[in-house]
Length: 351
Image (cartoon, rainbow, N blue to C red; front, side, top):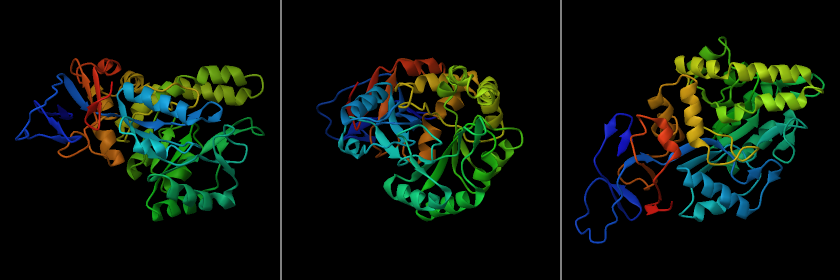
């Protein structure tokens, strides 16, 4: 039982769907599972109920959640979805979801059918709305292509961002933002944001600010891998944007490693549900290792550290028995994450 990066126990018991490290006094009907056990993996940037065109029906959302579950992802921070997926909370066989409500974007500055599209005077109102609808998170679109400028630009004025983040915090919610480029980062961090998604625009000037303010990043490197194709598709119409996207892609690994070296919290997220399929958590961990993050820390970014960051228990006494069983020690080779042997949700073997 890999209770933590350096804490290993020989066995645990699951009784009534909960973890116990004490053998039950009257254990009669016992199912035994052997292997190397991790807490259910975390995908901290995932979209259940969303595809490339917008909201999907419940059957499609169920297939998405099942794909994530079978890959070992048992805790999802749903970083923006226009679909109501609260019915998933009543299913004992599906991953647990922490929702950020629906994306909040500037008018005509994001993917069609994804977000509330509003103007700056409405930002506080919509942030408050999504803070009440979500599970402790709100998702802003911090930058996107500006067709007049022909490149990525920041979406929100500083004053409105400060007021909106303050309102979210007053309501007990944390705030994250989609950001590809450089321009929006300083304002967002100084305004008190809690996390930035993708964060490809981090530089030697802003990385220390993230570290100082305790702002986490979720790099979604499996998504950033699509930048060259996106750039090629927009080359004729937006050459500045295309060149910018290529530069961000080329330095993606250096950016993530520099953030980690500076002490910035880095967590695993795949951005599944838009243009990417679900079930990519193992691939994202491998991408973090490729970026130069030590394997144990990359593993923690989807296991122990990720659960602590999101305020959810791991393999703790009395915690829900959400765990994944592997044939070998994933600390020795993170590639084993792609081959779970058993997936246990609320104490039942589901895959």
